[in-house]
Length: 294
Image (cartoon, rainbow, N blue to C red; front, side, top):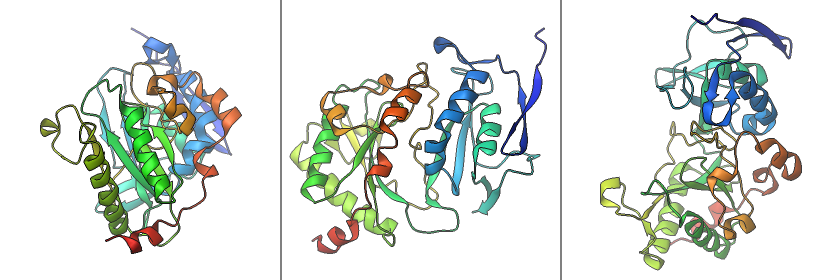
């Protein structure tokens, strides 16, 4: 029987218990828990920006990928004193503040981070995210679809940034000015979605039920509600290749890159050269466009 290893590290004055650092989490990539915590530390300035003070859902893989997993919304007990929570709809959510909590979750084998689309205690969205969800497990047209939606947004005068989900899909992020509502985002989302499905009925669908979509890519504009989540920018994903949800340049979309191109073993080098592409896009006047919609 394997002997359990346990120790502590100190981060920002907080002691974090680390157990079994040699446990394989992504066996195909040779990523142990220790390596994961190192990579999570490198990702933290970027990942925390899009998780901090939001209602956090994580997906835990106690035995690594591809073992059993479970979604965790309610904070586990007992909690270290540095972990903050907030009760929302009778769920005691973790609200990340900094690196200690992130590494504590990493030690619990939380491999994916899915924050709410709004801050805890707020009813307004932090950004607009269009979710392009393939019906096929391998979708060679996903970047083509992303480019189509990006061009429509530019025609409306909106700058945006695409990001891989780290799985099969893509999300397109539009930073928004304060005050826009979820209802307004669904209104403009429906407008854009209807336009692209009429323009490219071979590529897009607004059909919610996967069994009725055929091989088309679902343009999901309905995700914007309080308490809903999407994979955070820069979250690792529990896929065999340890992919990371990664913001892209539009030139990379045109080159037809794939989600597998960006993973835990190369993301640090990319970020050191490019920084956070999302933060480089100013808040967009989405409300002005909503006001002009028919």
